[in-house]
Amino acid sequence: MSLAVLTDRLPRRTQSVLPGFGLTFGFAMTYLSLIVLIPLAGVFIRSAGLGWDGFWTLASDPRTVAALKLSFGAAFIGAAVNAVAGLLVTWVLVRYTFPGKRFVDAVIDLPFALPTAVSGLALAALYAPNGWIGSIFAQAGIKIAFTPAGVVVACVFIGLPFVVRTLQPVLADLDSDLEEAAATLGANRFQIVRRVIFPALLPPLLTGFALAFARAVGEYGSIIFIAGNLPYKSEIAPLLIIIRLEEFNYAGATAIAAIMLMLSFVVLLVVNLLQAWSRRRTGYAG
Image (cartoon, rainbow, N blue to C red):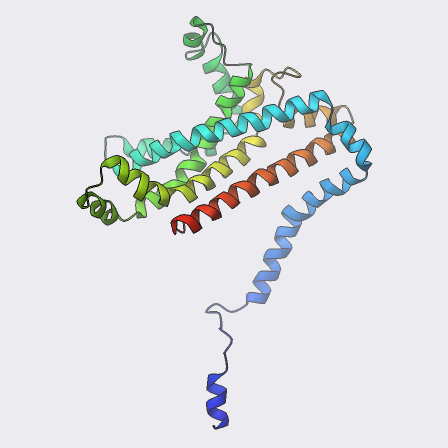
């Protein structure tokens, strides 16, 4: 066998269409490190300086625990509500044509454009006991603003666009021939949604849930105006970090930030594992 034939059979390195991978990859990693990795590492390094006993003392403070429970609990409930409501909103926007559709589609992005302080003031004015919406609930003895329920409302408000914009392109690209084939085989609408449509939407739905949750956990401006900010009751973790910094208690602020970072990472890791499991199970790339 000649040398030329052996050379042709050797695996060849695939060349990129666009040159400069080494330079662009180095820039991307450097930029990511400066903007994300190094600041986050600084939080852990500062927390490690407290020692385990000192960190645990600050982390187990009842006020800190109450604030973390409210922030993560409200963010989880808000993301769950958005997962259901966002799926319905996306279905209407993609599958139906109606007057004012473009306006409704543009309104979805309003939480992105509004300053957080503006959205917080608007929510507080609407859901206060004398507000347009709050007065209706007040007649039934339900108070929304300045309670943990107000925190959930704010989390729903800021998280909806993440779910809708994640689902929208996937649902728009979903082949309708699969639905028609299922219908010709005798499947009813519920079976088509459950066996054909929902498996394709589950991975992006989990992605939207994770994005909405992550956004709500760290939200500050949209929540403080409607939360009430009462310690042990309606005080969120980001606000407690600001309070600790104003008290020059940098160790306490760092400990809360480190806990939030670790808990957020665990939740996002679980969601990503569920998303990967869903892709393997259904076969959809999402």
